Amino acid sequence: MQSVNHPSGDTWLELTTSILDVGPAHDWAVRDDCGAVVVFSGTVRDHAEHRTGVSLLEYEAYESQVVPKLSAIADAMRDRWPDLARIVLWHRVGPLKPSEVSVVVVVSSPHRPEAFEAARFGIDVLKATVPIWKRETWDGGVDWGLCANEIEDVADLASAGSEGD
Image (cartoon, rainbow, N blue to C red):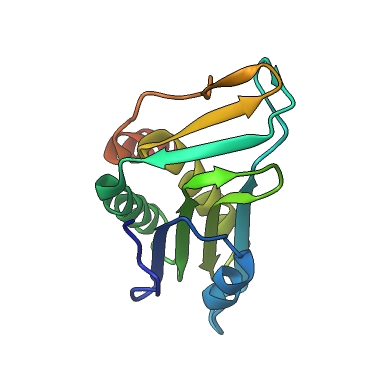
């Protein structure tokens, strides 16, 4: 399992089988020079597209590629919002039940607009570029999630998102 169990500078990246606790991520992101900390916590829900009664998600990853992709996302965030202070990008793999946290994105910055925009960018690009897949168990069976996307390149999404700025 590839993981960075401690922050490296102002970036904390992790792929883990452990329970994700957003408290330490939030607390680490707080800095005296920042007036904003935005926390996004993605949790497993009990339904998916055309699937009710979801009781389990099992996340699998192309492990050797996850942390490098997360690092590229953090770099793109810093390029687009140079005043960002700290960034947390975590994802959990393995079996998760409804209400368990699967992904955490935390961003701190001096001002809230940048923190909100960067956090939204972070989760959207993570979902589109990081090679993590989920298998769903629901009332009607077990199969891979229906909302899977083709893996995209971080740089392509970063440049596409900045054209309208």
